Image (cartoon, rainbow, N blue to C red; front, side, top):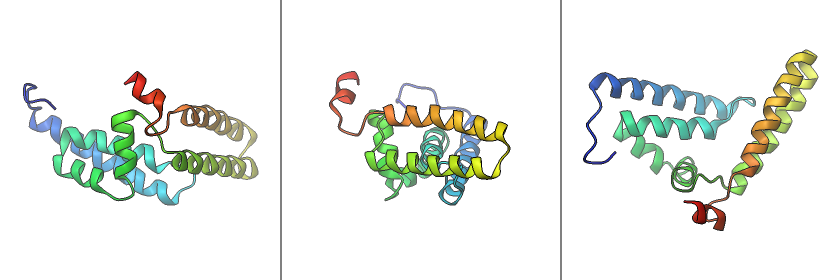
Length: 136
């Protein structure tokens, strides 16, 4: 926030705080659940925390595992190659598992969503990529 911007109301900050912790909870769950991605929820939690809790935002950005991904996204809208690869591998494994255990309609729906999201993830620039600096 800039110094000129009016400070949000207490209720607005509280709602952002609640959203930040809910999204952080989903990020933590995404670490162990194969169909739930952790990093996008951590980035969304940092976004909400920046508006509702300066302390939580500082903790998220300073976190050794989450901080670099949050920083890369916040400054360059970029995803590290290792994170891209991990996301695509986990999405593929989850998609194959879905085909093994779910009804065909569910497997087709999940696969379609994963294909679209996988393409979007793969198309994001990498941190420090020349394209990112030119478009910023």
